Length: 126
Image (cartoon, rainbow, N blue to C red; front, top):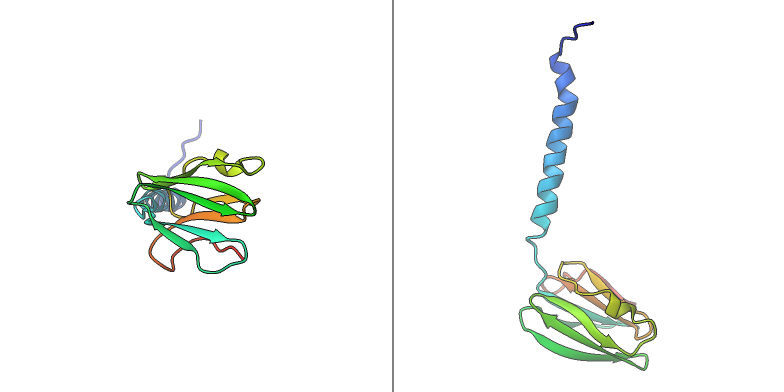
């Protein structure tokens, strides 16, 4: 058997990897603290998005492209409860609660995006 002596240089790479992993871990879990405050709704063709606070529970009806969607804002998140658009992908997306998450209804030409203060929305429809 060979005896291998560890040198200080042999510990540098694992230490750097460990520090990088810890930094990524902290960044990932601290990102969840940046909670979204508003639902932004963009319409095909652009224009200013509609903005709804996430701290007020409500149901809102949206229409576009000849289709109607019913959005439910509750508990700091939003979901499309029902839609008469084909495929219902927007309904199947489910509930979104994190900044930057979106629900898209292509037939209705609507994008629902969670964001922070005014000007901080994370999606643009044009």
